[in-house]
Image (tube, rainbow, N blue to C red; front, side):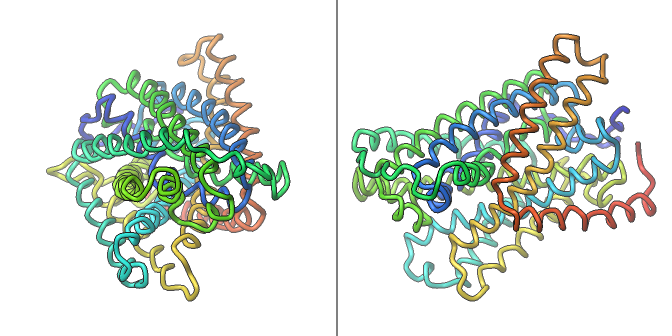
Length: 445
């Protein structure tokens, strides 16, 4: 099976290697760096460090897998393209359905993390759910406008925000000199293997975005080289910062303090270095969260693009702006869903951290399904597509795919039965949509 040809009006090839690294690393860093340590502390305790190491190792293999698939199938849509190539239209639809939902739902968690740090500068904002809602909506729609203007403008935002993450990196490096060993005990207060799996399930949020370089493939300069290098360099940079922050936060604060805060990095720096460095971290957190939101809004506009071209998603999502060359309808549609998710702020008794944790787990499951499909797709394509894989590459890719598949199944178990149940229902609910697309809109393939 071969991928359908792009439309006559093509996307613009404006994305460079540096922009791709910034997209991959920027989509991983952000709220996951600044807020996720609290979520991990609540389910695992200090043994969450083991979760970080296991997840980093598993996603290194996934990064290698995407760096093999992306250059061989350089079409916008990434995970959708690989699943459709391997298993056909229905698997391709299920992949794009879950992946798109994970992106637009996850964007609500990202902007919530940014608001969690912004409230430190305004007591009135901290007490006003309406103020938080309005500010979050403003951020979402301003970035939607930036992305409609073009991938070049969006990449400039990503590069700037990536540099902002140097601030917490330097401060956390200094904080390592003031670690309190007592904070690492008890090391596994909630048990051993189940908390490690639960921690890894949350960390999918941190590593979601590892495939980012494969999604805007048709907008890249020299996609074969850029996808591979961008994926691996982005992974390496983000992983270094994740592991450093995990050790620094656990060493600086007792576990119950970390678990109860929506701003664990700020608290850790305040405890070890003082007031002004903590303020600098809060400012960097807001900037980094805006950057990762910008990157995922870009992704949400490209994820359904090829599926819409093929008649397997809303056809309007394949429309390209006549002036800016961007999938503007898909960008607006994704931001509408994100805006609706933000109404969770108004549920009685809700907190920013509670809204963040719920949307993270829901988005994570939506991400895990496409990753599992893509691991299986890599195994199928390596064994079947002899024109794109040599015998040696077949063996290497097949082994990578198998290990990634079992790692992702283990991580799915860690998400918990309730979230898996709801995620499976969402997957099933997409089936009538697929039937509607197939019977109403002829496939372009």
